[in-house]
Image (spheres, rainbow, N blue to C red):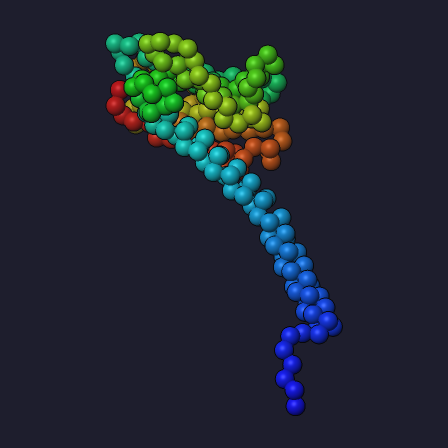
Length: 201
């Protein structure tokens, strides 16, 4: 009986065919995983971005302050544009901002101006000493902004449509962002945002 080492040509072809089939199946499975991973990553990134923008709004509002010596005022004005809520809010905050200054003037509004590159819900930040605004686009698809102010004056709690004062902050603020196409706005930003304001003046 003779001992045979190596492979015949047929055995080699069978081995290569099986290896090719396994690699083909593995590549197909890998491409399915990659195809499913891309939308998941995009959705996760969108949620993270919406959460960061929501956190920015909460931080700015939580830091709202009034100072007599700097003539700071909290001014929330009710507005309507083509039957859509078009409220605007301006206040001073001591919350950290991209400007890196201790006190920043904040303006929250809807930009409907076709001449500007930004659209939708905007935050405008301005250094109280140097001026020069920096604009942050919060939600480009927003077409409505409704802001309500919680009054706790004289023990009566009520949500008011506007608030203008240089001496008293509202107890809280509720922001509601809307759009003509609701699904075009991130789900986290469609949820009403309620922020309790600090008592320090």
